Image (tube, rainbow, N blue to C red; front, side):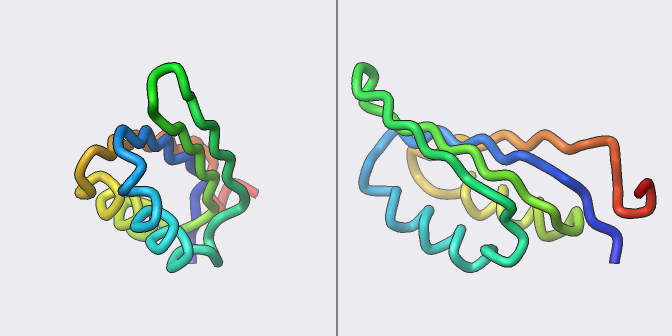
Length: 86
């Protein structure tokens, strides 16, 4: 199965969405290499970055599910490397 490295950037504008985000991320934990969350108290938002090694469809599904949540914005950046480039 071909996988890609990607980073999903998440900006959370409403703290009530955090529990839903964590549930979604938990469902994809076998593909997640690491994650970092930064609360930005001055603007009352949270910024989360999630690094994944997964097939394209899995990365897209995660990003899509997160992006459908209210007050949650996502952007995904893919590495040009795939598992066939190793």
